[in-house]
Length: 393
Image (tube, rainbow, N blue to C red):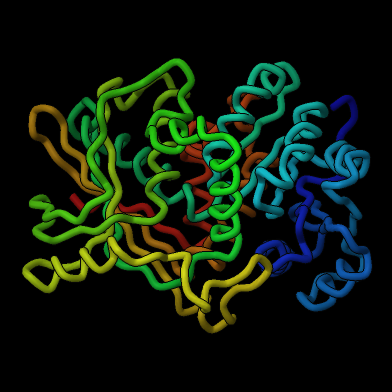
């Protein structure tokens, strides 16, 4: 960018369910767009933008930007006006190409909620070199997938280094408690991915590998996360976790981008804790068979839980690390709202502001939150967004 942009952040998708929550958070946490952060709302319809602006109590002078992924010129103009584009418009494999390309072109930073590894790898291959040149910092997966997990592993590894002078060679991510729904956008992204697989079977390798986002590097075989098992480290049965396929890829990409501070033989898995004994085993087996995206109650894109449901949601994830010598430690990550919407909207907002305001030392490229923002983002999330990162031993 040759001139200072008008805005710190433009929220693209502000008329959608999650985008509206992001804009509402900005109003509540930072006030009007002329205060601590200069931000604007963007979407396809000016009329709907005005309606949402009034609905969330944003000031009447909140800037509104009309942009549509079907109109590349409007996307290009949007990207040229801001330090960061925050987009909630998914599935990204359908609506994200032009937004990423425009940000790379203008050296504009970018954050999204993407959990679509096939598209993410395509963007890495297509834009890594040009983003490095333009200075654009492109950061996917800035919501529940994958910030609590990516940053949880990062902070546990820092704790391990401090205590033992070496990283954990093996970390187990265990979801101890969670209340909240899978987002409609996540369900739609899975549907789009299945259609993409039908057209391009080569995507199977990308979706199946923990190292599909680390071009040129393949680490050791990873633990099996697809079947229930008894975990002796926590004395409980554990079940497959629906977000593990994307979270694990991002964790390994962070290690890759930071030049392997976790080691090249690092192993990582994520599962959901049930309980000890036969009941725990039965629960784990039932969870393994369940389809989290099935049923009539699965929200459609643009839909989501009530405010009360969001407020009553929460999550608690523990990360248990062990070195090759047997030294061990653990760290918990907790969030104070439902993961798919309430907490996610706060996490992506703070990610965008971190890039806009916190003088990130990394250069341009396609990043993960852990590798790009690291502890600066952790501080924001603890100070503003209701997350905690707490060593437990």
